[in-house]
Image 1: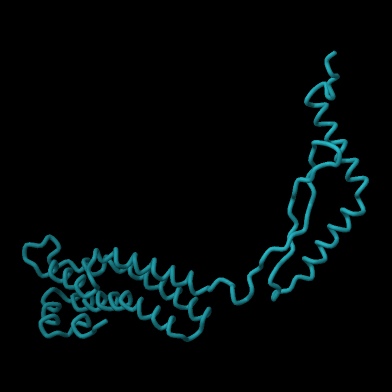
Image 2: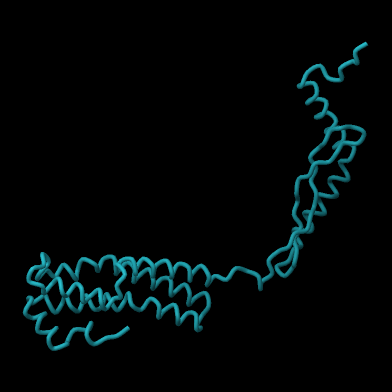
Length: 216
């Protein structure tokens, strides 16, 4: 004789499991409430200097005398970050600074600022250059450089607020100095050439340009 089926359909099986879970919860409701209350109290009393925190996680628990499981909440301790382990804000600031410096170097196409300006001057003075005598050679790059200079200044301000005066901050500021120098050099050349190519040629020949006097 074939054994009698315990459940007539999957729905009957799911309903039976659900009923068992409800009965278990009803029977053990006081214990579950106490466990939850203990977790909430531990979380409320957690201090900033504690080395661990209590978190509630879901776990499967086998129902007694059956092959079924229920989901129950359990309190577990996990390590927490102490103040000494807190993320260093300067790390992200430094990463932002490096990213901007990389953008600046890409803008110069592998040249240093001094050689970049020298290349523009050659194009300006060269007789067979399509850009001969065009002051836009020195004005066109300024929009992008103004943006980079401001962005790097904002980064330096954040670094100053985060760490105050220190060697790392001074190094960060020095790293961004070429951006500002290039802006000043191009502005100076543009002013010198605003009265005509001859005026710029004269300033260049007499080494009056800031680009010729300054060093990074």
